[in-house]
Amino acid sequence: MKVVILCGGLGTRLREETEYRPKPMVPVGGRPILWHIMKLYASQGHRDFVLCLGYKGEVIRDYFRNYLWNTSDVTLKLGRNPQIKYHSNHDEEDWTVTLLETGLETQTGGRLRRALAFIDEPTFLFTYGDGLTDSDLNGSIRYHQSHGAVATITAVKPSGRFGELAMDGQTITAFREKPERESGYISGGFMVLDRRIESYLDPSDECVFEKGPMERLATAGQLKAWCHDGFWQCMDTYREQQLLDREWQSGRAPWRKW
Image 1 (cartoon, rainbow, N blue to C red):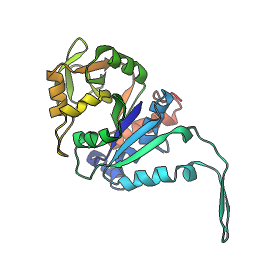
Image 2 (cartoon, rainbow, N blue to C red; image 1 turned 120 degrees about the vertical axis):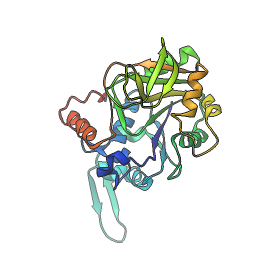
Image 3 (cartoon, helix red, strand yellow; image 1 turned 180 degrees about the horizontal axis):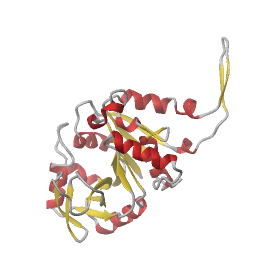
């Protein structure tokens, strides 16, 4: 199943790092958080990625263009007919990565709408390039296929400052963007979507997926929750980047399923 990852935002709350690179390329344990997200999906069988680029997208392009060079032991033969011999294999050799330029100022819904041109299946996976979890992603797919709604969001329970989901059982009835206090589940950003999502997206690069489209889905009863009470952590700030880095360095990173 294809995985669409939003990689184009400015990441202004992590300016210490994003002044020089896009937020998905900020390192956790020496590797971009984007790599960790992709490894998480690949570990559960999903290795076909569409990366929606924007701010400093050339950094992500260079990373994947030179992936073998940057991750292998190499012997170079210099001269007029140079040769390169790579000595290492890696688990990412079966990945397919589409690098899609979606514009510097394009909002999340606009980026998703552009990515749909590369989706040839009725159902696909969708997430942001700044969060990690140990959720059962394939479990969320099975749940999505069981209820027939347009969208399934992995719902999590962290502390503080995120948009809150109002729920009736496992049906999301409203989406409230960043209330002052949160009393329940919030969107963890890992989603399963049907191609029918296109009809909920405004035909504009100004479309913010988390506002109009999600609100319309909730009103129509087409937004379901896969509830996850385990690990989830976004990386909005330098403190959160350091937290994830420490988890990885400890050797006990909950999201490491490979």
